[in-house]
Image (cartoon, rainbow, N blue to C red):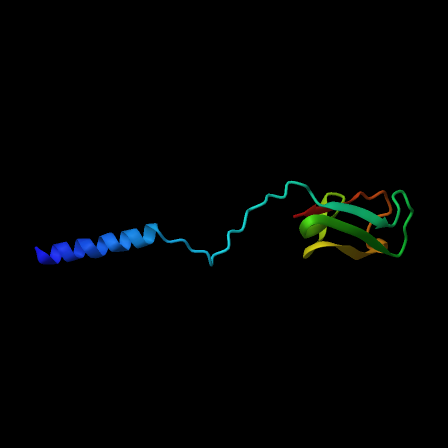
Length: 113
């Protein structure tokens, strides 16, 4: 019976210490959801421009928090993915226009954060 009484005292003490624990060394970091999509825009070439040979496609991006990646899509097909993990910057892609057909192409830039 003495053993059970000592065990209850130890368990009660442990329970009270655990309940009264105030761990001030662990920082509380609030979780803030970023619901604003990143901004992305073409800097070169201008839309509607006739292109030939090798062309440098340039774009810029920014976000309040961080842009994780940018995808370049030509005519509905993903051509390139840039893994970034920063809040702003510029990207370049060299496109060899001689490797495709002579026609109108639709390019898109898609950014994720």
